Image (cartoon, rainbow, N blue to C red; front, top):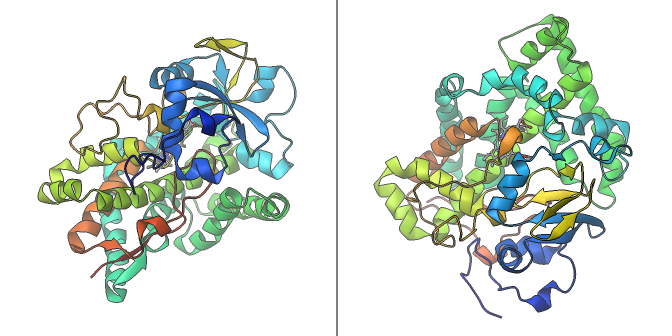
Length: 421
Ligand code: HEM
């Protein structure tokens, strides 16, 4: 077994043809723990690979940068499977009504519906609008670090990285801070228990309760309108902009989930990557002006999402000699594209001064991340405060003890205990 770079996101084990006798299974632990090892082999040997999702569903995986970009800009690839196949279910497997309601958000929709929905919320996410939130991000960060300082240690994900974006997005949407724990409970149920016995409980118990909870919020907001996204959506509905209550519910869930799951994992991954690269950390500490390019480099090198939502071609499409049949499930591997040697010089080197970093960490095309400016603000403030206030910040366990979650599309840790003093 050849080792590339121990303890970093760069594949620990070099993958050979012998490891690839079976289709790659995205939910296998082997892949989860060595994504870049597999991505490198696929980019070089099988850039349009027919892999597996949950060990049974076929999924075409694109691993070269240009293929991912071309596909994400190609109108023949769409998100609504029913339209692509001319019939059948919206998703490759049957889903109960409550799940469909939450899943039918704009991230899984196509034009013109996607644009109609995105236009309704995009105003809240312009850089100018978001700069107003900077003070609030500083305030939350400070409170969390004050608390952690008293203990001298913390579980970084739950006690620091998560509460920052959760509080911000809840306040933006218009959820009361005291309601945030209940909402995050549902979000966890919806996003985490998607395997084994957990699925049934999630689909038939948690999701209907989650929908009821958001319906309650809408009722309250109708009576007490405020300066927030939920009120704007309700007003749009009332002004007859063809927005249904189901669409409002799906949007609230999308914003809450997309608005914090990704960011808290970026803050976590960035902390980890900097600790694993002391030279780069020292450079950043000596010049915080590098924080912008450092965040972009982590999005490339160790970003929280390695794939987009699945897409379905509306006709047979041939890429590099492989014909992807109409209606098949396809996923561009953003995490693989971000290490493509044709695009990035020395992609396996973590370099916070990297210039013209055209990473795909926020996706590409019509679904390009709506919250990218917000994610950048939150991550920069959180990371600078964390490292400035804690010169001795270090992992509380050996890196080999950290576990990655086997969630398709995600590069995320299960926990990250750190010591401060
Ligand atoms: C580090 C943080 C983040 C990362 C890495 C990230 C990444 C991404 C990616 C890769 C996509 C494209 C997904 C696809 O094509 O299927 C996306 C879409 C999206 N993101 Fe983010 N995101 C982050 C933070 C946020 C935040 C803070 C929000 C705020 C609400 C947000 C809201 C969204 C929404 C609504 C979409 C769907 C846009 C559409 O369908 O038009 N994201 N994000």
